[in-house]
Length: 257
Image 1 (cartoon, rainbow, N blue to C red):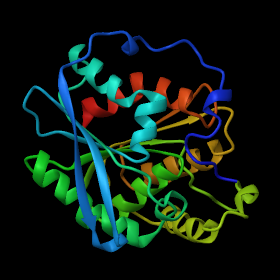
Image 2 (image 1 turned 180 degrees about the vertical axis):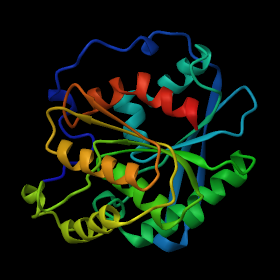
Image 3 (image 1 turned 135 degrees about the vertical axis):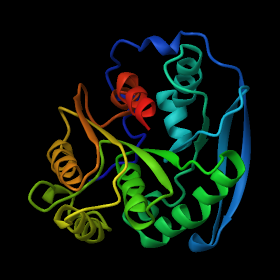
């Protein structure tokens, strides 16, 4: 069944570390912003890194604290800015909250993210330019779900090992509590003739059960006008594999959004 994004990190076999882990990092500061999200009847406290340079660009990550702890997302951003690989940007780490509900194609979460969280962040950090969304596993599903339901709030998507469950590929996941909502929503996306296209980069490990459904989703989005880049990467459904895909795949997306 679908695991929490950080499961098994200690047992994973770590590959060679990417160069940005040791490159000089851009200066910046960490701070927090708490938002009252009516659609979720909950407060969400985002941890934000802002560079010393002025910028209106915003990256928003689902499972944000875990992305930073286990995949060093903040280090990647700061080092890539210094290396001139990406433009300066704010990095917003969103906590997962009730992850197995919120991220599983839940309309209330899409409303909260698309109509409350992202508008509040762009009003505070941006000049109106939509954010780029990052997510892995269920977090990738939830980011695409929001982008489809609320076009215009996200200007690009970096989706890693998305949980785009389909009966023909993913019967082993049928015991998951929100299997049917995910399957129904995924089916609607796959059957759609077009969509609110934005640049998308998808990565998925060659050892993953999710590989087939990710390929299928990439083909569907490409047919609906999304500029899609799909990368089959080494490794499985784990943080080291996701971390090692930032360069070049996230870098390339950020250059073209």
